[in-house]
Length: 339
Ligand code: ADP
Ligand code: MG
Image (cartoon, rainbow, N blue to C red; front, top):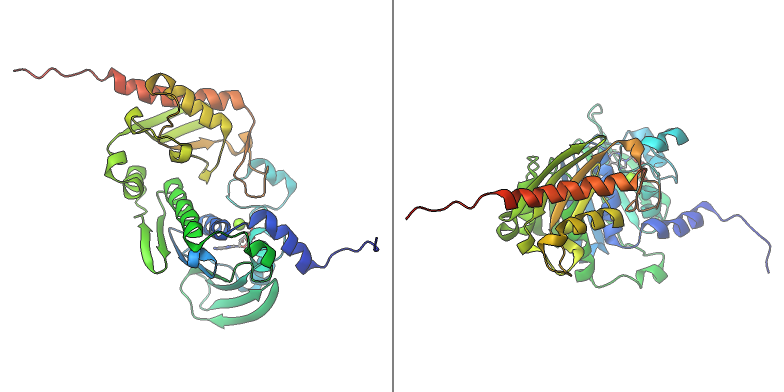
């Protein structure tokens, strides 16, 4: 055995990047979440070769101050929380301060950003965690991240990437969910120069569902609108007749964050039990708004899993909200058409 040594920062970042950055879609997730946190009303995502060689995310958010740019790429550097107490009531999508350092550790990143208050913007390049260029530049308000050659310096990880087509479909799915999670933001997605998604950002969730899933599904929706103490549930669920053979169409968001949750999935599926056959899964797009103190999002680096302070309450509220929407439809009386 050799002697024990503390690793250098570049190596530490490379190792840690593995937790957050698995594939191009992980980068797009982190960059778009940052754009949302920056107050953007319009976000464009462009990829080439499934995002492996090229990802560009452009937003019209608040931008980053020149002096803050190098810090933004340091591990555990964030503008979103200040102290451990803040972890108890997270209102932003990000807070761990890990994404930019992780992305920069395993790719070649170019950042162009400008705040409203400044006349000039900045352009910054960082490759494999090392600063490569930093200069003033003309730029529109907002931020553009360009990420090239993912895993160029970690061939072992690069080998695990799937084909460009598969990676592109992961990115597409992600942008779809982002658009559903924030109907008030206009999302654009281009794959190899072709426009795939373009939502208006008019705030109408049903319009987004129509744009993404088409008329067939948008024409068979039931509205959910329930409020219990500390929890609001809004959105749409599909009539049982459009249920599918897998869970891919069960979308639910909590405080604007796409999550996976066994308890919510069970609540939804239990509510549908009397309305559809076994092994069918409903279409849902549900927005849950909870008190930030009632949930813990600091469970996993990707923040897809969260903990609820009171699981039982969430289960009850969701299954009742969904159940009520389903029953409501049943209660609509059949109108007899006079001869
Ligand atoms: P986190 O999102 O957890 O704070 P990140 O590593 O993703 O950590 O980003 C670090 C910081 O860089 C953010 O806290 C934010 O201040 C800044 N930042 C990143 N992306 C943007 C963006 N698109 N617009 C404005 N600021 C940004
Ligand atoms: Mg972030």
